[in-house]
Image (cartoon, helix red, strand yellow):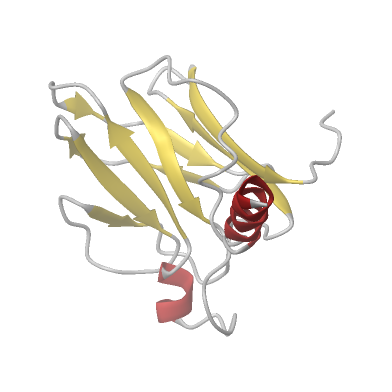
Amino acid sequence: MTAVAAVAAAAVATVALPASAADHHPGRHHSAVYISDVQYDSPGRDDRSNRSLNREWVDITNNSRRVVNLDGWTLSDEDGHTYTFDHYRLQGRSTVRVHTGTGRDSGTDVFQDRRHYVWNNDYDTATLRNDRDRFVDEFSWGQHRIRR
């Protein structure tokens, strides 16, 4: 009976986190810099307010001890919405949160300055590429359509 209760509790915990893709990372981190978490469904009403837009975000983590210059790196979705890092250095052992809306960039938060949501709630993939357009990491969730 205890094993059944543990499995049921684990299933409930998994279902309770639909707005974050943290449980659906496609693979191991082969790079020191990777997408560590995604909040693709802004909590609350999707009213396109700047507050709501900024509750939609992607975390990029640098797991190394060295500073990484992200200048020219891109973060994009399946529909081609692309954010390009400009003059940003990600410190070692730290994370930057990329918000969808507008705001003042800091050492821990940057803003895409968009007025519409980027990440599809049903399915999407956040893709990180370096300044040479080489694949670094991706983070997927939901039922994906077939790519052409």
